[in-house]
Every structure is written in structure tokens, then in C-alpha cells.
Length: 168
Image 1 (cartoon, one colour):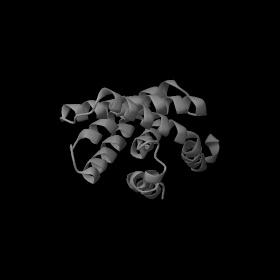
Image 2 (image 1 turned 90 degrees about the horizontal axis):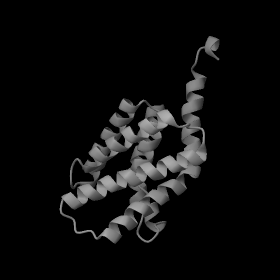
Image 3 (image 1 turned 135 degrees about the horizontal axis):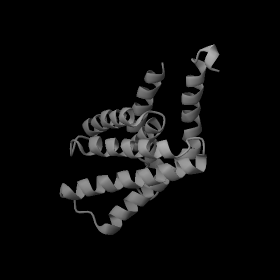
């Protein structure tokens, strides 16, 4: 059941930026919900498992977008590895710290996307790239207090629910 819900969240992460967040954009900047989803998955899985989540979601996003195949696969795998590395060192229970992690990791992931796009020949200016990277990072960080408690609770409660009685 959990994996069905994760697949549904992944599907919504693809659809919502073009529909609902079209109206909730800040100066044409929308959140990167796939990246936020992968950050949450990487926070609650081991680094290799999180990287596989990132790679799989990146392939799905590359197929959905239909250009520069491999760009999001690489980016989301790097994001998941960076998040897994940070999650091993910092506490997942501290919401302000999670907001900071999401901001920093989204910033790094968006920088990777910008550099890959510039390498592919897009003509972005420095200001436009900085505005996009900062805006998406800030938007993802603002969404953390709304979304993270539900995700974290589902992982923690689901884990505690199925533990044998002698481990409680």
C-alpha cells in the first residue's frame, strides 16, 4: 500500500507544477516537487536506495518532459546521494534543520540542472539562472512545513507499527 501511495505522489509531483502551481507561481517560478519528493525519500532510506529512487524518478521525469534525456536522472541521483549523506549526519526530527537541508540540496540540484542546460546550449543569462535556482530552492523550503510532517510521520509510524512486540 505504501508503494502505491508513493507512486501516486510521484505522479502528482509530475502533474501539479503544470496545473495547480501554474496559478501559485511566484513570478513564473514553481516548486520542483519531484526533487522535494526525492529529498524526502532519501531522508528516510539508505543512500544507495535513495539514489535508486532518484534515478528512477529522474528517468520518469526525463520521459515526461521529453528533452535532454538523462538530465533529471543524473540530477536527482546526485540530489538523493547528497541528501543521504546529510541525513546520516543530521537529525531528521528537527524541522528547521530539514528546511535548511531542503533549501541547500534543492539549490545544489538546481545548479546542476542549470549547468547541464548551459552545456546543452540554452541561452540563459546569469541573472535568470540565479533567479530560477534561488526561487525554486526557496519555494521548496517553504513547502517543507506543510508537507514534511505527514511524510515523516508515515515512515516513522509505519516502521513502529510492524515491529515485533519484544523490540518496542
